[in-house]
Length: 154
Image (cartoon, rainbow, N blue to C red; front, side):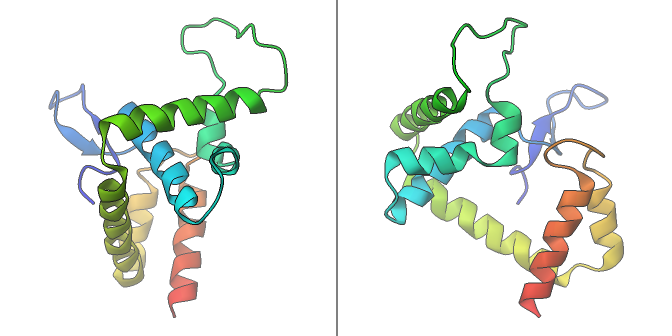
């Protein structure tokens, strides 16, 4: 799992990988992997992109201008998000082997899931404390997810 949820540090150890929120490059790859995984279940490209656009993390990251400019595109934003996701998928697919990457991320998820099942309460609370208190990925949503996994595994 090391490096999966990481970002570069600019504090005491510049350039060192630290566990934390997703890096921008990880977001593009994960977005492509969501689409690739759903396409593997028989979904059309359009439906897979629509499904990816429904994820809270994606909603929080897409549709917000990064340079302070407001978008000039009319509409409710759904079409634009789908097109952005499809474009991201195509770009990542051309550069990376998505089948291999999907297997690797799935293996990391299974390792992380086993850790969740085996970890004691103190460890879970510590990791939850590393998440922000608000936002699409926060400590409360992390703990809800973890407890749901533990409940289903028993």
